[in-house]
Image (cartoon, rainbow, N blue to C red):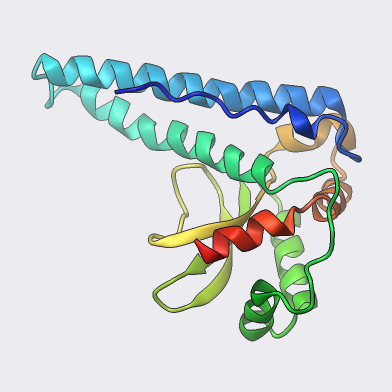
Length: 195
């Protein structure tokens, strides 16, 4: 099986509100998830070749796989929905209409999303689209491998682990959230809804 290659997010360097040092540290952390996925995958393939399916090592590596995988993908989604040149969500956007239908208004959705991001604890805030019920949900994901809504598509992802903001903002998470909202690439978020 081919190895995963980290996505290059260097185009975000210079993003207003997040220092280059913070971003480069964050990119390095993300690249660690990609490296660990490749190492785990190679080790699991070897265990499988040697018929070691029932071993404790096989079980623990498979449990760890979800953590590393989601760490990789959530960071890709997070960096992917950031831009240095953000624009507001257009009034005629299908996503805006969907948000208004499910949350009452864009403002109510934003209050909900921001409030979740400001909660104590580490994790992620994700705007999910459930294709089956055709509904949007804001969801708190505490750890990478737990809390995701099965079958739902992550549209907008905000990292609220300390590494995403403490270097620049200390414990002022609200200031980081403000920067995040100024940096949303709504074009990408809308594409995720239509896929």
